[in-house]
Length: 204
Image: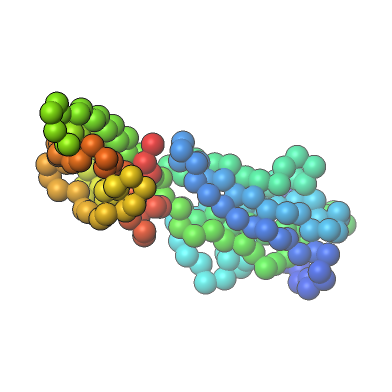
């Protein structure tokens, strides 16, 4: 087993850049970065935690051999299922140092990432004869049972006249249960996720 040691580097060519993350529709965490210009940096340690360590690099070094090692020649990204509980992902670059591995900072940490509930919205329009209105019916289904409870605060619907936004409204129990409303034939409805809830629910 190789020995891990902690080093300090401030050289520009040792810097990891463009560290970023997202969650895909299958609730995988996707983390990407650009490797340092110094090609001696051949490794990235990747670790998962439910905590929020004050010093991510020190936390990573508590048991570095237990973490995933990503090699430069194979990838500049990391993909892993989030699972049932929120998780944070911590990374630090490393290079060979004699017979051991030198790990250095700064360490990079994602926000706390959540597995999203997927909400599927089906909207059906039926024009009413001899008038200017149509009946719009809604059906909402969720991948998780608690999705309906989240959607009360997380989802809204916008009403448009042609392309002009007329208003934005919360969902009531009728719509959550699969209701309907009457609007003008020149209008249409679009569901949106409220700001601040995009990490919890996704429209599909």
